[in-house]
Length: 88
Image 1 (tube, one colour):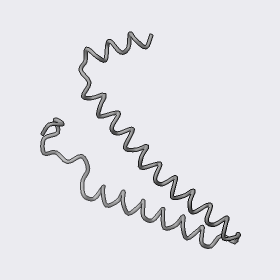
Image 2 (cartoon, rainbow, N blue to C red; image 1 turned 30 degrees about the horizontal axis):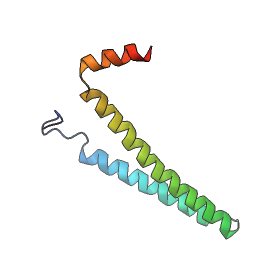
Image 3 (cartoon, one colour; image 1 turned 180 degrees about the horizontal axis):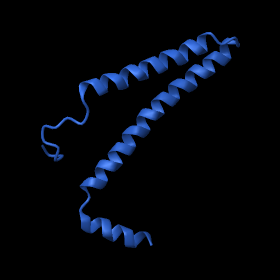
Image 4 (tube, helix red, strand yellow; image 1 turned 60 degrees about the horizontal axis):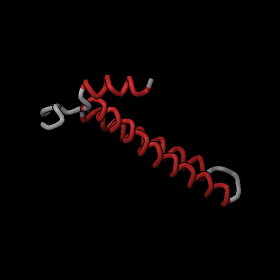
C-alpha cells in the first residue's frame, strides 16, 4: 500500500513464467554451446566465467534502472523543477 500500487500486481503469472523460462533456456543454450566448443579447457572456462559475470551484471543493471525509475516517481514535483535548474 505504501508504494501506491495497492493490491495490483505488476506482472501476470504467465508473463513471469515466460520471462524465467526464456532466461533458463538462453542460459542452458549458452552453456551447451560452450561445452561443445572445440577449444582448450582454459578457453571454455574463460567463456563460462565471462557468461556468468554478464548474467550477474545484467540482473544488477536491471535492478538499478528499476530502482532509479521508482525513485524518480517518488520525488516531489518541486524538487524535480529545482534539479533541472541546478543542472543548467
